[in-house]
Image (spheres, one colour):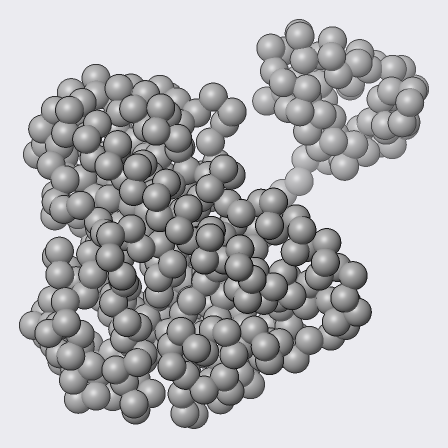
Length: 452
């Protein structure tokens, strides 16, 4: 909006005339200097103005381009695959004064930033950080990931984070137009990953013990799908852990129908109470399970390092196809990850993180019970960073999410976690990105909105 107003104003100015300084425009529009600078940068990109460091910003002499006509693109592109509504919410950033109860990453104070700075400086001095790494990843880093899954390091492929791993695995392990089965509710990022890969989606209900094998069997029989997406360890959004008997039944079904199970193991290092279950990968000798691990969630959102662990021809196909995407994960990033995972700082970080997450989880659940009328928390998650709350019948979760945003609180609209229509109104609340005082204040702001 500001850029548009300035563009109209510039149209009536002479070439070479100087614009008011950013501070003055910021006061005029009631906007931050960063917002004004962004508007000026967009005008500069269009050739309307030119910035001269130390002197100011001036009206440029370039003729204004005609209004663009992008109508041809819509016809050429065809129907969009990825649900823009889900994708936009995944990248929802909070403003400086907002309370982030939806962000799927750690707050800065929970990230090992001092350690990352030290390790990053050390890694940058290594010649290996600036050379080409193998497409499959640094051998030492592959060995570290392999140890957690009792896997051969040759079966490990280093990738730039869990989200990229999801899209890449779904695209490589099956053909466009086929079906992937997912538990429901499920991670919206997995839903858009399947859409990006050109796959159809079939949802199977899950409860506090994970996906229901009886309904999974029905879905496999009906769809003949060869790909199943699951989160057996602290599932997003519910925090559920796949029960041991169900784990065995899932593996039996995968074997019977010749299907792959993508095990999204994003929360393994986010255990709060007790220890996490061992990876489903360790129970599968025949290569049905393809596991995804990531450091982005337990360390920092900018450390885009993860791994895909897969056996047999599927693993070979994944490793072969990897080079077509981007040759390799930047070696500097891999060096930092390797140095962190093999240092004494790593267990210290996990211990500190467990204590802080426990405090924030307990605060959020206590505040939900005390402040949110009619809200029911299904169960207390023993790990991860989210919990799932059911709202009073008839609540419009989309309207509630929008009202919460206007009140300065970001929450997860439960409808985004379902492939089909949600069976009940729910929201996802995340306790990793807000402090305990912020959590209490966020719940206080949410309470009056539940009359919607």
